[in-house]
Image (tube, rainbow, N blue to C red; front, side, top):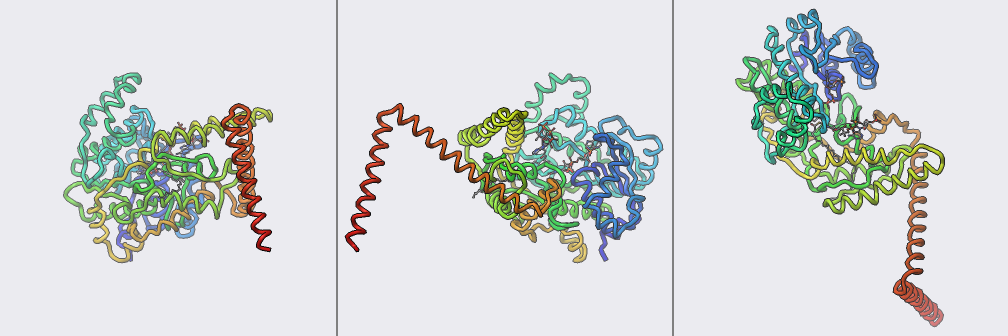
Length: 515
Ligand SMILES: CCCCCCCCCCCCCCCCCCCCCCCCCCCCCC(=O)SCCNC(=O)CCNC(=O)[C@H](O)C(C)(C)COP(=O)(O)OP(=O)(O)OC[C@H]1O[C@@H](n2cnc3c(N)ncnc32)[C@H](O)[C@@H]1OP(=O)(O)O
Ligand SMILES: NC(=O)C1=CN([C@@H]2O[C@H](COP(=O)(O)OP(=O)(O)OC[C@H]3O[C@@H](n4cnc5c(N)ncnc54)[C@H](OP(=O)(O)O)[C@@H]3O)[C@@H](O)[C@H]2O)C=CC1
């Protein structure tokens, strides 16, 4: 019997960010392993024309929840969607809902955040810092609360190369930042943002670091733990391999490479690609929830959920496997044949951006215009290059995260819990994982049918022929122009032609002699 699963039975659990990538997998696992849990409260806002109820309905009817519905048929009765907007005061939660949350909640998992790298500092602070502070204040009024688990990121201290499981303070106190956001206007915030984030690459990592400081400062006598996952990828094993539903992290770039838009990225192939499957993060999160509530560590423990020091894989190997999988299962209607590579420096990167990204987009848009259609490729390419420029920071460096707490926790689990809540990344086979990841992107994100693979392969063959034809035509035109304009080129051309002629004559003569 799993002690962790038994622990969550009968519990009332509050999850923020339950509609997000990690939140959904967390809910799924909780229902699947502890179908007797009392209730999961989720804080949801209406979005994209959908009410909170419609959003929950959509999640429960997705492929991800198929197994859950078999094990826990009344799952919809156990989810209590509470209307909330974390950008608002008191999260805009009604008095009755707030009362219920405060009096019933046993465990809090705080997953909500803005993960956009380029978010305006005001918004990133509001969600990643102020909302965390408010949630902690709420938590301090929950008499039945046993544990509060905060999800941060392993990159909150990406300005360091070796990162321990401790909280590193930022120079300006989070409270001062929160206060200043209330009276500074956007223009001034824009001006001071680079100074505040310092040697971090974006507002995301900076505000997640501030969020951790807030957790430390507002912890009072709560049982708190912080989890720092690295780059969260598709599921490894559970509920099935390869599940993913958003473009964050590598997923968007894998699509861009598979569709032939992304041809090069400035990156270090030997740098460690610290990817971690989302189900591994969720298993660790649930184990931490149990350990924090039952063992009540004296201080706030931080758990690194990373792969680099236990089972490292580099970007080169990962990229290679991504490309190898495209050969077997190509994406449909590719723009060009998938053929991405890493470039070493800014100059080569700019060259390839011009030649492999911008030029084909301009040519294609010209073709669209000629055929009376609306040009769109340059816009897509600009967006892709913006994304790539934000991600390059993370593919050019390696970090070392210590994992003492995570390993300690692993040793505290019973063999059954180690199996059911497996977060031991040493068992992960990267090649198999990447192949399933690419397949998962094709199935669950792009919603492409496997039956379309022969047609997709045929399309790639056509693209290869167009590529050869285009290159040959380009070469002949360039050469013709050169010959017309330069005596030197003409001399070279005659030298090559006469050399070939002589070589062929000699070859023919020697083969006649042998006969
Ligand atoms: C030794 C041998 C060597 C051999 C080498 C051989 C081969 C080499 C092969 C090369 C490579 C092959 C394949 C590639 C494989 C991997 C490549 C490397 C991947 C690296 C990924 C690293 C990521 C690291 C991140 C680490 C940070 C910490 C992790 C976290 O804690 S949080 C999670 C990370 N957060 C994010 O990822 C959010 C990123 N997104 C944003 O910040 C923004 O969305 C944005 C990208 C800035 C775009 O903002 P915009 O305002 O312009 O757009 P908007 O968001 O409104 O979206 C507009 C449309 O764009 C779509 N979209 C959104 N995000 C992405 C995305 N990431 N990629 C693509 N498209 C995206 C969105 O859906 C909208 O579409 P629409 O609705 O149709 O308009
Ligand atoms: N994905 C990754 O690679 C990594 C993620 N993390 C951390 O993991 C956590 C979860 O990330 P992930 O699931 O990937 O992120 P997602 O972007 O998929 O999910 C974010 C969640 O936060 C919710 N949210 C955002 N703004 C509000 C708001 N104003 N009110 C209510 N809810 C809101 C979103 O709701 P809605 O659906 O309404 O937008 C969504 O449920 C975050 O804390 C992130 O920092 C850490 C490392 C890596």
